[in-house]
Amino acid sequence: MKRLAFLPWLVLLAACGDSVVGGACADGYEVCDGRCVPVGGCGIPSKDSATTDAAADTAPGEVGTDGAPGDGVGDGSDGSIDGGGDVVDDGASDGGSTETFPDDTGPLDTGPLDTGPGCDAGLLACGGVCVDPDIDPLNCGGCGNVCPTGLCNGGKCRGAKAGHVVAIGHDYESTSGAVAGKPLANATFLPSRNPVRLLVLTEFAETSAVDNVDAILDGAAKSSGRTFVQTIVVKASDFHDKLNIDAFDVALVLDQKKAPAGQLATTADTGKATYTSFTKAGGVLVVLDGGSGTGEMPAFLGAGGLLTVKGHTSTGGKSLDVVDPADAVGIDVLSPYLAPKGTVLFLWTTTPDALVRTVVAEPLSDGPVVLHRVIKP
Image (cartoon, rainbow, N blue to C red; front, side, top):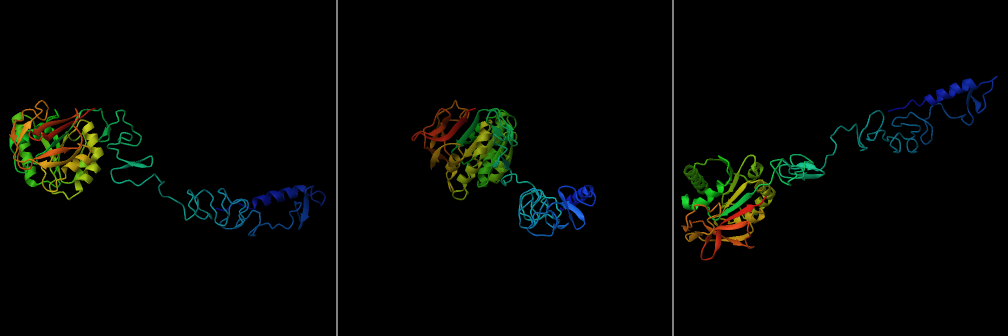
């Protein structure tokens, strides 16, 4: 962008014309080539073409009151050395473009401003950090939306409610019997909603286990007058995406018998915050474990922050006792009952507390087969 460098000379000539008195210049002016110029100004050209002077010029790429390439004097508004220096903070060589960003590399910048880190799908950049607006209590549903209860689920602030985690040491691959199936039915119908909305993860489960679980719940619904609707997902990523209390009351993870070694700890670690958010909002999370295959359900329980167990051991074919018949998961479960094939005892790493109760156990070892953890509000 060029300035009208000749304007100062017009002012000077006007002053000179006013200053001629009787053929001489006024005080402070002198005659130079038949015209009056300021004293000491004779010899300065009417247009500056010098490369290292301090006079106004109109050379391409120069703006301001100097502009000679390389002299660093009076170069526009950004202070850069001239000869292509920037004018309005952007940087493509001047010479006519209006500029907006300080990059000194090219023409007018029109791209978006930097808004922080690039986040994976489903995440949101808030304060320079990627967060999940579905479960982040400081950015619930959007940046800066803080939940007073500290609880966010499904992108909404929630009032805290008692939730539940139930671990059942049956995989139901070999049985759909009502007796062994009763703890599963009780856990599934813990919520009072009718129909109960059930989300089921079957990713690495056996088909027979999927069918038998469906049969157990159908039978329980018919005998109790309750109903349920289920959504089956075959990928853990979909399970995590869908798991919110507005859509589901109960989440059921079948025994992931065919999971690759090490897979379930990674899966549970990825979903840990979602499981916590769901259960603290009043959701019920049920995990089945039959001990066969890669046998990684204890790793899922631990990495997901659900229950602290260090492993399991097989106890199929043994007699089991209901040791807490007053617990909601143990109500009306016949005792004793025969453990079906694919039954395990859970091995503790910590002593159960008042919020983690053993509902069904193997009497000789006192090892828990069904555990119920209440997630307090």
